[in-house]
Image (cartoon, rainbow, N blue to C red; front, top):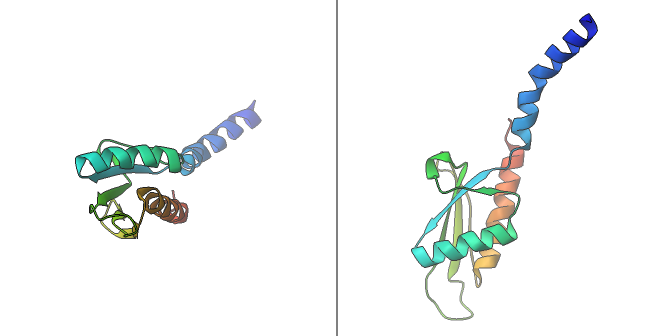
Length: 117
């Protein structure tokens, strides 16, 4: 009986840190209305390993998406990722929003994996 009690107490102490380590980062996407909708849709498609949130105060990262309206062939689609404390993780500009978001997604995943739970 004592063996099982000790095992339960020891494992209970480890469980919360294991659960926290498995939670994906929460990302808040912002920018101009039409670009935000496209950014959220693209994030869901390209970066399913993050959780998107509508509450910036609840997010681990904030991503600002923009499209400067420049024509084809110009790097007018951008995404900038920052941490909750405001540190820039990556600023990416490319010809497509998909590429910018893919770059930001990889940077967020890399940064998140370096954090200690």
